[in-house]
Length: 343
Ligand SMILES: Nc1ncnc2c1ncn2[C@@H]1O[C@H](COP(=O)(O)OP(=O)(O)O)[C@@H](O)[C@H]1O
Ligand SMILES: [Mg+2]
Image 1 (cartoon, rainbow, N blue to C red):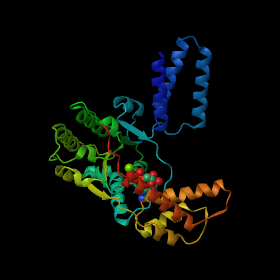
Image 2 (cartoon, rainbow, N blue to C red):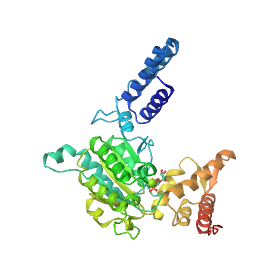
Image 3 (cartoon, helix red, strand yellow):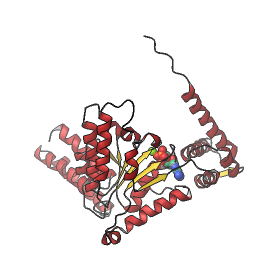
Image 4 (cartoon, helix red, strand yellow):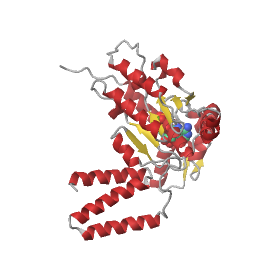
């Protein structure tokens, strides 16, 4: 095995580990062991085999693959679409606070997917092509991961930086590839910042390529027939979307900024375990306009200083201050005029 092959096998092992792909993990470990034996390094080969054996005993041979529906090796998948999709590890138990309407829509997605076979008997499909829209930090990405977790399928996030290339035709080909993968393999596929590939074809700056990219996306969604996967386009700029896209979605789900009620619920959840002097209701009121992520950041900042300063409590006013300070920094960073470039 060349050094390059060794690196490739290690990469596959890491991805397999993160995606709970036991088969992929074992296969790459075996490849490394074989190669060490071939290179006359039986000691090292033995020690890796022993580590593999121990890891299997420790994990108690948990599910062979993360996915109960199809026995798919995600290392193979990742090799098929190198760099285009990253499979993200489910974040463990996370409490998402969502507005009623959003929760209702998501519950429908889950219940339809759980009844996929029953629906199929009547020639029906669960909703699989979704648009998540709303400002940053309101749970679009977190919900895609949550959905995957609920359905016991992996969550693949499309890496836009790799998907969009400057070579004519390649972006379209990449879109086709990732949608095909999700069509063949059960997963939640999240295309974040989808406006980058879904902009109206009437855009004044159209250079032909944009038209091709959007056409490919439309065709890809049309030929997305698998009932075991969900494709989510997420965006904060849906007004830029091509009008032909809308009717392709099975549902359009809004992730709005939290109201005072949701901010209070999140604050209560996040400060559980920290003694807070003062009223969280006042903090909820004072954080109007903040996203969930901003509220979370303020609480974590205060929690860190409580730990570092060996304190036993924090105050609501501190949380409010932390959120306001960060907002001020963002405002100043975004409003500062760029200096004109001197040529
Ligand atoms: N609705 C929510 N409830 C609880 N926490 C949230 C929510 N929305 C966002 N967060 C927190 O903020 C982080 C970033 O949110 P994210 O899902 O990436 O937002 P978006 O994709 O809409 O920009 C999440 O990982 C989570 O910790
Ligand atoms: Mg996101």
